Length: 117
Image (cartoon, rainbow, N blue to C red):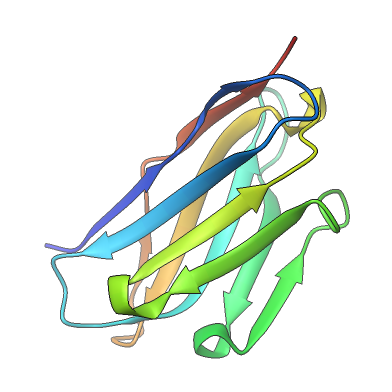
């Protein structure tokens, strides 16, 4: 059964950095498109960043442009989210959604990111 596991969340001070990872395993299929979402308590889920066309295109939410970078290691079937200049309003559960070359979509379990002094 396909596994999608996020890691890298934690507690960081404002202005700090974290790198999240999202690894797809137990599959012969490769990640084609992937998206990072986040959801803070009492708020709607927000699309943070996307990588599509097997890495040929990236898109970012307006609130993270210039601070976050989505990247991927196709050999490891892993997608990353580098988050710099973190702010308290970035506090949320971050989840990744990957679409494999089988055209099936999978979600990870989410990882908590807390930005606080």
